Length: 336
Image 1 (cartoon, rainbow, N blue to C red):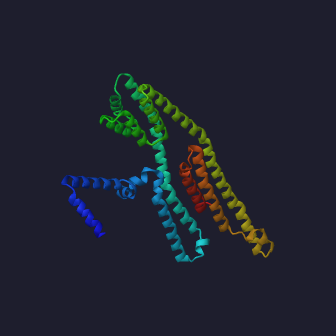
Image 2 (image 1 turned 30 degrees about the vertical axis):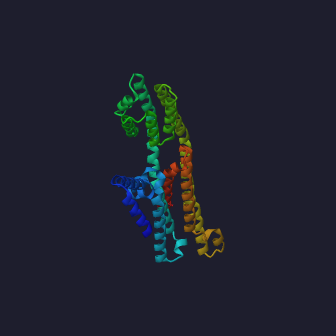
Image 3 (image 1 turned 135 degrees about the vertical axis):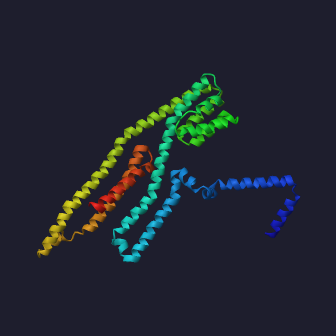
């Protein structure tokens, strides 16, 4: 280590003041680059890193959920003994609380992200059409983008202003439009940008290409909206199926099993040996807990199926899963 430091000092002495200054600048640039990537970026901007992509929140939510579960389990065992971990319904409550801690942040961020992406896709056809119209009227592309940037395009406005700033810095249109598509990040934007850039490189009429891209994005948005509307009925069917499942369990528990248990208990008290076989040995707490587990499993996976059918992504169904799991827990804790 001393030999290495000695060589480093000798090399630094051999450098001129200008070279030393340049080396210091490069080292600072490398430090800034490392701070903007990986763990360094997470430490500097934790909230931004966790919320820029929905799945990133699992970095925090899953460890917190696991911690809550084990802390609750250890506390329960310390207060009521080891058997409480297998017989007490409090374990179910702790598990469901942990599940909600893990799922609710992801469900919220995914819903917010999907709404943002949908709004961006809806605004794209208007943006392409307006730029094409101004370009056809004789304006240059930078001027057309500059005027369009003053308009209101929802969530897309921020990206258009960045595109306008880049083109005002004399960045070529093709390079700027590629960066525009990368920043938006949707499949539709990247496909449209790729079409525009390739047509521009080939020497085509940019205004016609923009009009074609506007028509393509408009048709894509319409088809996506139509598909979502057509699949909405199946999402409703999945949710209604869960509610029917919950209702059947409630009726069966509140009438059939309770009646059998009460009749069996009455026959056993009267000295009738057949009472034990008729229903006197039914453990209602066991069956309620068993049905709660079945309802929670049904709720969670039905929500994922609804998301896959309605939006083409299972993660999008977490919002349904969270709501139905809460409904199942409330129903069993307060009504069944």
